[in-house]
Image 1 (cartoon, helix red, strand yellow):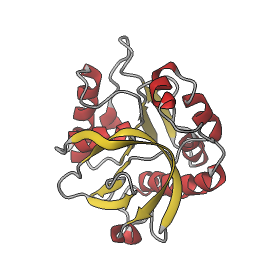
Image 2 (image 1 turned 180 degrees about the horizontal axis):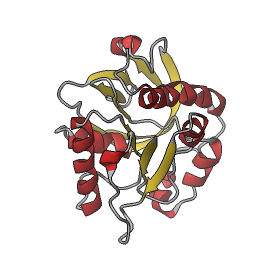
Image 3 (image 1 turned 90 degrees about the vertical axis):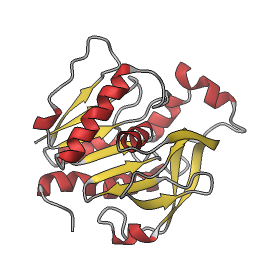
Image 4 (image 1 turned 90 degrees about the horizontal axis):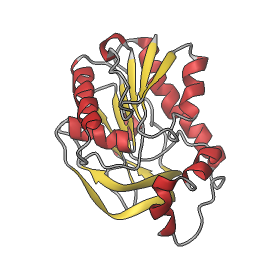
Length: 232
């Protein structure tokens, strides 16, 4: 079994998701379509697709983002499990016909999530009510038609959704380790966001709980691949 992970900048990898794939003996490859020489791999031959974050907007005139949107549409039509995180969730929403736009405020740091009623019926989120997780985004998305809202925050209503039984979009970063967060803070592409913060980010603030949530949520998504059938 193999998963393709679409990366948009070299410093935003899959983090904790890598270990979860490895422990389940699911192979994975990174796809870096933002690099001019990168080839479009045969996504149809894979058992799952993951689309990660990045500092650009999905509305930017970037050819590789349009290519990824078509890959998403093809995967959804073929009932391949798809996971979008932050920019990846926005790509997923746009590919499925929903609008992506600036959020009224940027949400960068540790903020609470409240889980919707639909989350209590979801195999990945059932039993969760309120959690403090890591965010880094300035845009938001409308829900695609037919999607169920799973989580919201005070600053951004549409934080997570499920479409069908194996397609998930998450605006927040459960995959991020403390080291990843610290590294993001010193990247040139993020310097504008960092300057706007009222106080420095604390990478370790809720990292232990984030690891637990990552294993639960992303582990459950990995299990959809292993099951090869709709989640119950």
